[in-house]
Each structure stands twice: as structure tokens, then as C-alpha cells.
Image (cartoon, rainbow over all chains, first blue to last red; front, side, top):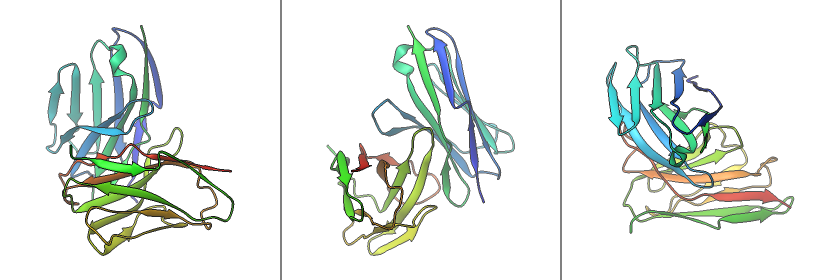
Length: 108
Length: 114
């Protein structure tokens, strides 16, 4: 069945360093969504990618969708303490599947 | 404000007991979902409903039941058949279950076994 793998599971960075999380699917995806869950909170939708090779930016966040629509990445430039949380990808084929998430901690 | 309300925030269950988690939305969304989140794991789909009076099993439906008698309500019952119910339960909704619909989540219910 469809699986979505996300790495790394944890990432600890110094404030100001960059951060990247990767998402890989066993099947071609129709779209991929990214969510952020703050500690103690619920997932909040960040963005959706639909087109092959698509790149979208939100301030310091850059989202990419692979050419084969099987992988995606989220890159944060110059992390801040407000970036802490767990970042999930969710890939859709027939059904939507969430990755296990990458938990980001930022040391001030 | 429109949103999704889950209650209670914390819930304790005794062995052999059924418990029901509430989920209400005033977003006028057709589709609603229940997920289970365990530490270090992603969200796993328990049940979903695309429309009133219809629902479908997700990946881990065993030991759970749902109903969708009203558009705005999608309660989840954790039955005694669910042997490992301790988890964080998240309810979500989307305008429809279409391909490009982001999901809106409630604040979750944390269920523990006494």
C-alpha cells in the first residue's frame, strides 16, 4: 500500500542554522501537503504542492515537490525559536497518508 | 469564530469501558476525519466521513466506532475491544474529501487508561 516516509525523525539546530526535512513516497502522488504542529498543539496546514517540480516559498520556508512527484522537502533558512515543532508531510494518491513527522528543536 | 471543537481535552478510561470523544465543527465542511497520534509517529487514520450518514474505515479502525448523524458532529467511540487506546486523538474536517482540500484540526483529546 501507499507509504510516506519522512526523515529525519528529530533535528536539533542552533538558532540561525538552516533545517530541512524530506518526504518520500512509495507511489506517485497527486499532491502533497505540509503541516506544522507546535508542542502541545494540533497540526496546522502550511501549504500544498500539486505540480511536478513545483517550488513555493513562505518567508523563510521553501517547499519543493520532486519531478517524479514522489518526494518533497521543506527547508527553513536561518531558523528561529518560533520554528520549533513537528513538521508533517501528507501525500495523497487515492488516500492521504501522513509521514511520521520531523521534530525540530532550536537552541537560542 | 469558525473551527473544530474537541472534548474533553483529557479523558481517562477504565479497563473494559467504552468512551466517546466528541468532535463538532461549524465550518460547514462535508468531510470529517479521526486520527490517532502516538509519540514519534505520524497521524494514522481511524475513520472518515464524506457526508452525513456515511463513513468509511481508515487504516486502524479495529476497536473504534463512529457515527455521522449530523453534518457538524462526528463522535468517536473507543470500545473495550481497543486493547491499546492510550494516545492523542485528533479530529479534522475539510470542505470535501477532494484532492486539493487541506484539513483543519481540532485541539485533540488525550486518552489514558486508568
